[in-house]
Length: 561
RNA sequence: UGUCCCGUGGUGUAAUUGGCAACACGUCUGACUCUGGAUCAGAAGAGUCCAGGUUCGACCCCUGGCGGGACAACCA
Image 1 (cartoon, rainbow, N blue to C red):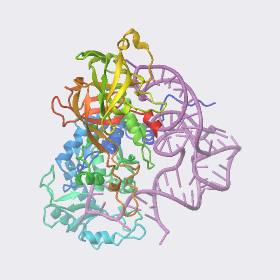
Image 2: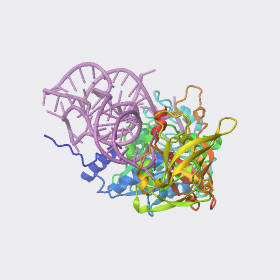
Image 3: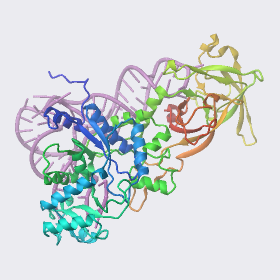
Image 4: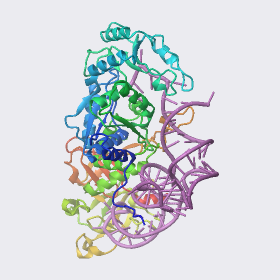
């Protein structure tokens, strides 16, 4: 009987490839990956998966992972993005040490390699216009037309290519093309453009160049120059792989040949992931910016209160494979709850207050009650919370006419105030509209937490704040940005923005226990029974602004549905 | 009428390479609880897109379908 092995976790397909490569000594025992963002936008959770994958693989197999900016299109890229990307990768917890590279570092080498290809009759200068090239390329099912310049003498291409570099020709007037196969069923093999003339200031090379390499030409060669062993990218580049390999062949590269592998990008429900759509949300003012806490960007998640560890765990749990997938937002939420449950200090805060008066509690008396910081971490110790005659509790913790499964406060019923006393509701005050303005209770002094009478059982425990001591703070309640699982999946003439959730942000004034007053931006808390919250950078000292990261799981709310 | 990739519970990923499907999220019970949280115990839910074939035996190999996706920027 064959024994199933349950203690070694199974490997994903990339790990299997790597293990095999290592066993067969295909890469000289090396594993070297790279994360290659184009600095033309902000990183999102999908990139986080790629970052965790590339750095994670390198780490697991004792290899290296480079950070390489794919900056071959100066019209779209800038240093602002470079810096934001570096911050995000670092924040996620990865370290590229001194291996911060740029495709633009290789412009000179790439140029020399291109010259080599021209000499080998594998590239030529083409003088067709952009439209002509596009038109001549054919369609996936019909072959393209051969460029009239395709068989021009090597010397002529060499000369023209040099003069392209020297700026003798106007933008767009000429390109360097690989000479492959205009009839290939793979469109990428129909004499793809390698260089275009483009007078644009590059964020690193300035005006040194007026010709810039295309992705397909630059990427594989950059991999080669960096000694990359496994060049991991997303599925849409699968069709590019023959070209990736063709360039390597044409350059007669045998040793240290990088190989490209593709995996399925991450999709998350209730959000969109394309740079274009995210940009549209920012520019259309639907969110406050790239780091709006509702955005699936890394900077947005950071501001929302997600921890790097939670995102790493998430990236791990979503797995790696080649089939299209849509991950449930609930998994991401599970990951952050799991982390914060263990690590976030507890605090009491009332978000929708109703006044509660303890009629038999002495006027003017204040007790400082001891409260556990984190039941999951006894070593975190305790804080004190002021208690007095007039409190606030959550409006939905009281019902005048409750259903039988309601464990909270209602007339004649008892509940415990967390860390304080058991109270009993005596009567309520209402305004002329029947709206409850105050709840009157009595307390049992013997039932204070820790006292002998405190062992009495009651069904519910409520959080509360003392009216005189409460800190009024701005609280931003975030919810999912879209109200349908797949906002991309729009009918004919629809738009993904039609599905924006109008209630994705609600700003309220919360009443918090005073202990949070001096907490600073980035600090995370659990508001007991409510959710996890993180202090926003908009805060000023003494006046924290809280962002709701995620609610607590709420089985009562679920029951009500 | 093109080429390539992919089809396993609601979702995602496994099944160490041919020995009748596991784990996670979600869902539902119950226990416990000074958070209706957490934790603990348990349950339901797929017979692996379909049809043939090979085999003692197929999620796995072969053939043919079907379905989904990618590819026609001087973007990456």
